[in-house]
Image 1 (tube, one colour):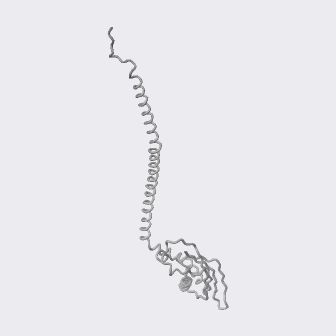
Image 2 (image 1 turned 180 degrees about the vertical axis):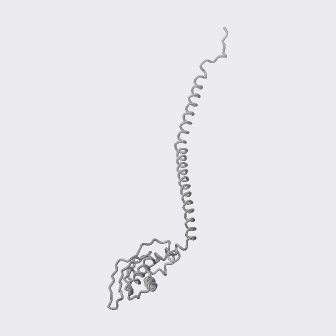
Image 3 (image 1 turned 120 degrees about the vertical axis):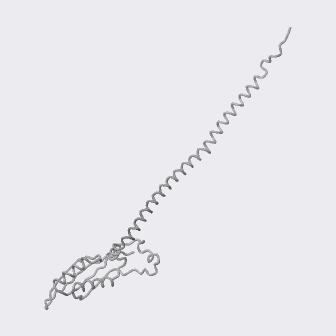
Amino acid sequence: MAIDFSKKPGFNSEPQSNSYRNALVEVVLLVVICGLFYWFVILPKQEEVAAKNSQLTQVLGEGTKVSGNLVTLQNLVKSLKSDSQNISRLDQAMPLDGNVVRLQLLIQSLAGSAGVTVGNISISGQPNTAVAGDKALLANPYGVSRSLRVLSGTVFVIGSFSQLQNFLQQIETSGRLMDVTNLTISQDSQGQLNMQITLNAYYLAP
């Protein structure tokens, strides 16, 4: 009787099964490792990149806004340089200090132009702030925050009706911003009219 030894049933089935099982475990482990790598490495990096992109977009937007503001500022500077006459008028109308002597001289000049005789000028207000030592303010007087202040005063003048009327018109049309708050007129024994006015003049103080 002949025996065929070419077939070896069952001898390699268990090693093959272990090999398949090991391969399956390796695949599962690889999938788990890939998942953990994505979760702990790639995903945080994606969030970081997204945050950086958001910051970059915000910075670019702010840069565009700053560029627009710079163009506007440059246009304003050009406009101011080309309109120096109106700026001078504005400085005259609303000075940057409460100089009492300058206001008294202005009223005296207006009275002389109107032909009235000045009896008395009394101006009161907050004393001038000493700024001689403030180099920043002196170098850039328009760069500080300022508030509206008032100089109040009384003016006593003598003249004819037309002269007094002319004096009031001089105050009204003066480049300095002033308003008359009270006015009284009386006549003396010589027929001259005496007028006393109370007025306010305005300035911008730091």
